[in-house]
Length: 225
Ligand SMILES: Cc1cc2nc3c(=O)[nH]c(=O)nc-3n(C[C@H](O)[C@H](O)[C@H](O)COP(=O)(O)OP(=O)(O)OC[C@H]3O[C@@H](n4cnc5c(N)ncnc54)[C@H](O)[C@@H]3O)c2cc1C
Image (cartoon, rainbow, N blue to C red; front, side, top):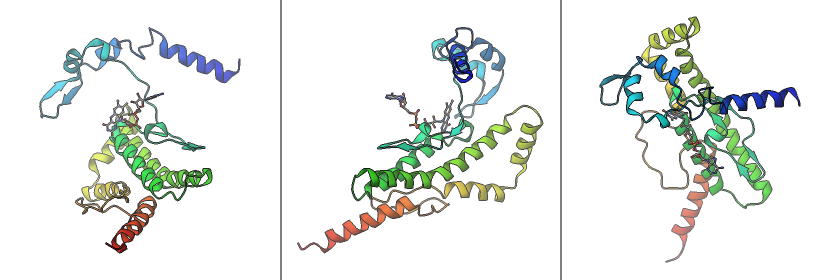
């Protein structure tokens, strides 16, 4: 057995072990440790984590591995990945779902504009999709890591929390705007008026789909009645 496979086997045993606290076994010690942690609910009421644990059926409480990674490979042959399958972003940033949706929009734009479905064309489109989304997702991943750092115990966490809570609001707006403007728009549907305060940049996938959409629209307009 190689060192790698021994390590993998050990980790797998750890995950499925009844004593590990991972998986579907109620991690009682973790619940006990965090019972008094204060939380504010959506309706503004203040509770503790313990109160939420008590309201939750025991068999629904489990501890999961929180993975964080942006993978390099996003496609192979005619198979392509999106969302958590190719990037796991720390949930503290609250960006996992929207990032997956933006992947879907970018990919749908490019597939809409796909001239033919030969393997070469498909590979080309998957590469364009990856080129558009990978840098944006990596930036989101790093921002989420910063937010995660705020909850770290020790001097690093305290320092990050201090900087984040004392950062001037104008600087926060610049940081947020740089993330928000990188949201791809759907190019193959009628355009809707932008209602947000941050205008999205026209992504390559959007421009590609929109060119085909406008061209097809012009054919319909020009067709004799
Ligand atoms: C604790 C926690 C809190 C989070 N909080 C937030 C938050 O506040 N805001 C936010 O934006 N994001 C949050 N996230 C991240 C968010 O949940 C994910 O980024 C998002 O769900 C990714 O969507 P997805 O469709 O890519 O993958 P998933 O939601 O994982 O969907 C994949 C689906 O595929 C199914 N599946 C897997 N294998 C197979 C198979 N072989 N055959 C058929 N189906 C299969 C799975 O059952 C699953 O339903 C959180 C994540 C965690 C773990």
